[in-house]
Length: 494
Image (cartoon, rainbow, N blue to C red; front, side, top):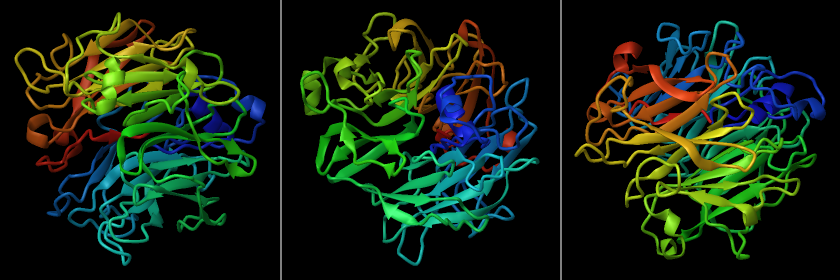
């Protein structure tokens, strides 16, 4: 989560999904616009002033049920995430509705928001494989309530309307105060294309007093990922998504629904300098990369090999695109794209690298500019196939740059573990200030580590940025969970 979005959450003017949330305070929009990376973090489930790290294992076996799934939470503190102060949640956890069943994939997506407005951030969990009366795999969204002792109890917030809707799937869940009234709402995606907004405040039984309505769209999209932030600087959260249009799988557009006092406005497609829709990607995150007080859009495009690559040489091996936010919204005419052949970025652009497979935005060195982590889960090195890596790109007044970029992998000195083929290190990344020092740590998931059991790494940050010294790793031995095929590290809150 970016510092600006965290500030919006804290004031109650914004609460976002994708695994983030905030303590809600009464304040003016002017206060909401103040960027403060050391203020109350958005992912703080127990209100102690430190952000907490939530990570998913949606294919984990729970009580013998294969792919039932779980979410693990390591609570933050001055020393970083604690491997002793932790919780593991499944649908068999006391207070969580329903029950763990094979194929539910609890944890298919996670985000945060103070849905019941009690001052504690809640964890919103997608259960995309849930079977409901509406049909198989219609999906579900649930909440785990935050409190002084951490997360406890829960409720069901939304379910799919028909078979294979997949409500709560990865990248298709968001939350936020999209009209600036201090009350958070929930955005879900039915059947990969229909956006539905459920408006709070939410009761502890999961009921939403604001009702449910469709989000305006004038196309036939297939949403790939979404995030929230203030991309026009008006103090109200906006919704940004990447999406295919109909069967045009090579048309990965960036769409923006601006928040207004009347809720989300009609969508706008970000247009590039050539007057056509700017090519997007499969991953999106928002944050103030250029330090002008307005959130920018960062899109990862890891999948190469499409026909459009002929006009996008930087798409080779994957690319990351920076689109600056302005008072009118994201300005695609000033977009800047980078790949591993760009100056300063470690490695070389090779087909299938997957550069930009998962992007996250936050300030890693405390200089006031948000930086970007980009997964490169298909990176090959040392004779290995797909061991994976992650690259941290630096922000600055000119936007995103390759200058000063650093790459990390299990072969980096000081990083625990050893790289192996098909680990897919970097499949998920998250920048989050867990120790409260004003600099975001880097969390990295390798869901195929140890034959698909999965593991997670957390890197410290200093005034020089992310460093391998003191990095920790944890897996099923730490969490006390079943390792076989769990894919721990598949996702983090966003």
